[in-house]
Amino acid sequence: MTAGAEEALRLVEDARSVRGVMAAAVLSVDGEVVAAAGEDASLLEHMQRTATSALAAAEAFAALLDVGSGEAATSGNEGAEAVPGGDEGGAAGDGAADVAEAPPREAQGAGETHLTVIYQGGHPLLFEPLSGGERVVVVAVETHADIGRARFQLRRLAASLGA
Amino acid sequence: MTDLEDILARAWARVGGCRVVAVAGMDGLLIERHPNVQDDPALAGAPAPEALEHVVAEVTTLFGVTAGAMSRELGSPVSELVALGETGGYLARRVTPELFCLFVTGATADLANVRSAAEELARDLSGAFV
Image (cartoon, rainbow over the protein chains, first blue to last red):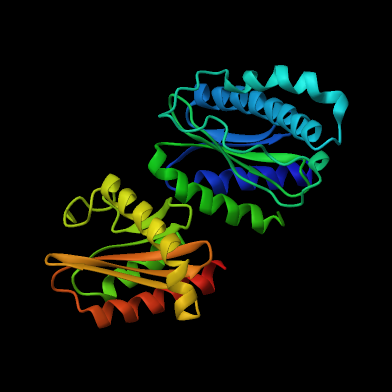
C-alpha cells in the first residue's frame, strides 16, 4: 500500500468516527476510489456514483466560468451541456441547491478550497477537496442536522493533512 | 467523545441553569451541542434539535445585523449578543470571524456567570481549533 493510500485510509477512518457520518470515501478527481469505509455497501456505491457525476459537473462549471471570464472560450458548449448532468442521481432535496459550490480546479486559478454540499433524497453528501487538488474526501451524513458538525470536522481533518 | 464535545460539556457544567451550549458557524449551521439529545434523553430541558437550529440561524442573522451601524458606532465589532425573556435567555459570543458559541439558559441562570463561561468557552475553542 502506498503512503498516499494509507493516508487516505486513515482520513476515511477519522471521518467515519465523526458523529452522524455514515460513510466516507477519498476519491481522485476522476472519480476513482482511493479509500472508502461504510457499513452500507449500497450507500458507498451511491456516493461514488454521485461524486463522479458531481466532479464531472464541477469540471463543466469550471469550463463555463472560464468562458465567462474569457479565459477558455473553447470549452463553452461542452460545459453548457454538462451542467444539467450534475443533477442526475435522484436529487430531491428540500429546495436547497443541489450543488452548492464546485470543487476547486487548478484551471480556475484559485488557491482557496470550498466545501460542496449535495442534497440528495436520502443522506446529504459533503465534499472537501484535499491539498493539491487531486483528491476529494466525500462523506454521507445521517441527516441535515449533521452537516455542520461533519463539515467542521472535515475541515480540521483536511487541514491536518496540509489542505 | 471528541475534543469539541468535551469542551462544550465542561462549559455546560460551569453554568447553573444552562439548558444547552452550542457552537455554530457564521453561515448559520449548528456544529455541535451539549447536551445532545441522543446522549441522554433524560435531559429533556434542552431545546429540540430543530428548534436550536432555528435559533442558531437567527443568531447568525443578528450578528450580521449588528455588524453594520451598531458596530461602526461602537468602534469595534459586536462580539456578544444577549437576549432575555421571562423564562430564560440566550447569550451568543463570537469565537472567530467564522464561529460563535451560544448558551441557552433557563430563568435561574446568572447572567454574569453565563458571560464569564462564554468568555472561557471562546478561549477554549480558540485554543483548540483555531
